Image (cartoon, rainbow, N blue to C red; front, side, top):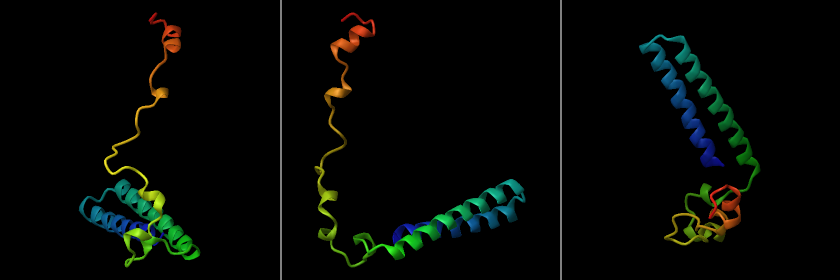
Length: 105
């Protein structure tokens, strides 16, 4: 969760800096308010993630010296060349559903 909180903290700083620059360059109130509120929301989410990260044990993503094998095996269970789910029978219409739709086939 430390990675996620860091991302939202960076977004918070970015939104507040953008609000200041936008206010100086344009002077429009609506854009300043929108960017400031966006920065406030990202601050709330980042703070929440920071508090949750204190309560949870460290994950492999939070350890900069972690090796690839320390990631749980369930993450590496998909085939390397897979591009998505394979088509199933549920995706193809059956004859019964086609005849109910009026296609007469």
